[in-house]
Length: 65
Image (cartoon, rainbow, N blue to C red; front, side, top):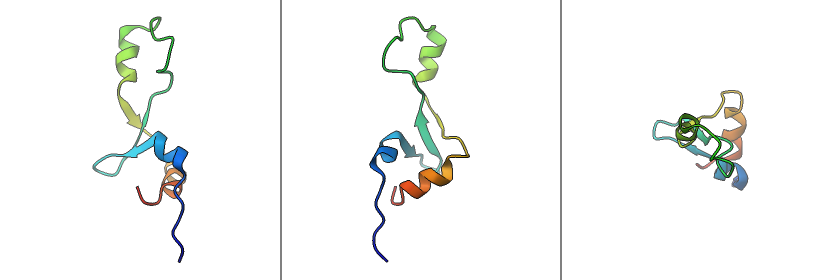
């Protein structure tokens, strides 16, 4: 069986936690952050779980991660 190719764009956007959960960054962190409240800015620093409807696709695109 040939080796599977990893989808590099997906690999850059998601990572796997120590227990195997798939994490993603929150959207909207690049610019225009001065107008956000402090609470929103702090929450954007944290990684969140990827939605369960996307997990199958993410695992298929990143077979060796």
